[in-house]
Length: 150
Image (cartoon, rainbow, N blue to C red; front, side, top):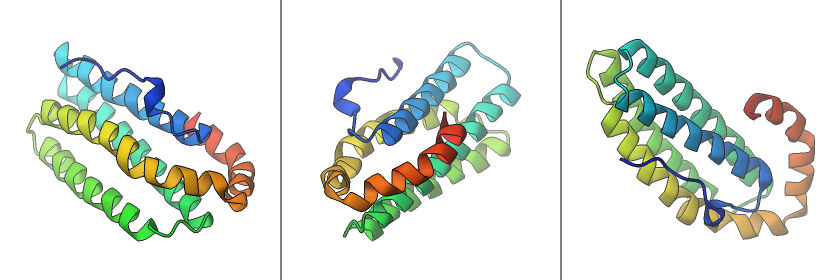
């Protein structure tokens, strides 16, 4: 499978979110590189764990941001994140049991991230961008999260 290439059409226009999405893309591509080059299971496990941990932190940040902006469809957005988390946790568990799920995980992440950004995240962007509280939230949180996600 080809690498996932970041393109401008994936930008949400919210810089901190775009940087987080770009970092997730790097993890997805790192997983593909590791899988393709036949790296050891321990290395794949490390990449998978880091990617999942980072993605869950991103979800938490994104949910806080849209909650602060009083996005009316936050419950639905959280459900999308929860469904994804359950799927990834299942794959992570199977990997821990010795099954090489790296290709399956890569394919799922590759298509899921693109669709999630273009559909689910795109739905909140205009609402958040118009909400004054969002700017204040990012200003307060950016220092902490830029260290975490930088």
